[in-house]
Length: 181
Image 1 (cartoon, rainbow, N blue to C red):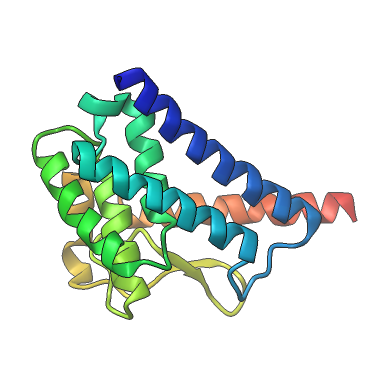
Image 2: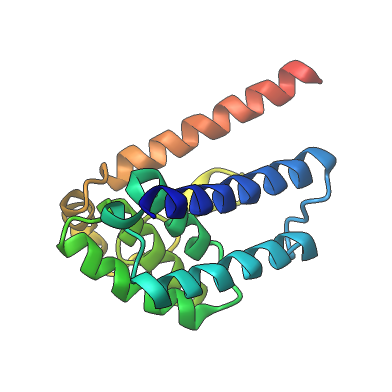
């Protein structure tokens, strides 16, 4: 059962990432709207994850192995058309983190996603936007003076280190564009 559940969740995650890459490669991925094919897949995956949670509880490491737990996190992270479900999953992930059944970063990313989507400041500083020059900048953070303490408790690097990682990724992306032009 554990392997079957893990396989099903990983298949959902792989399909999500494959479609995202296909839409990106084809130029169909709009920057301002939710692509209908992506939305349909996310809603389908979220519906199935709700069934899994109803039957078994949160599919953490003990239920779906590490890769299956990561896949479950990605499914809920992408279920942006169901804010209520996402918020419920934050509670489930808090419990799973407390019993060491999921990685702490999963809670941080989901909680911040839920907060930023509802227009509130994030708590862990995992969600980034871009500034006027296209460089990564974190969305507003609640009590930003202690964000690195919160990040460290869940195994994340400092906000400054994360921002530098994202900035370096953007530098490389821009260099690749220049090389291919």
